[in-house]
Image (cartoon, one colour):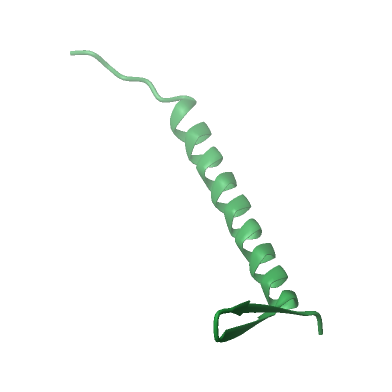
Amino acid sequence: MPVRLIIEGNSVYEIDEECMERQKMRKNARGAAEAGAAAMRCRKTGSGTKVRER
């Protein structure tokens, strides 16, 4: 398991790089899904809507 150590003063932090990669992949997948949903909303509201004037 790849691990990165960060030493800051008297503190030592252990970073699990595999976990960080999984989080990054989930975030990218979520962002892509949200971007696709936003594009669908734009196309849905932009096409075929007509406003009638009175």
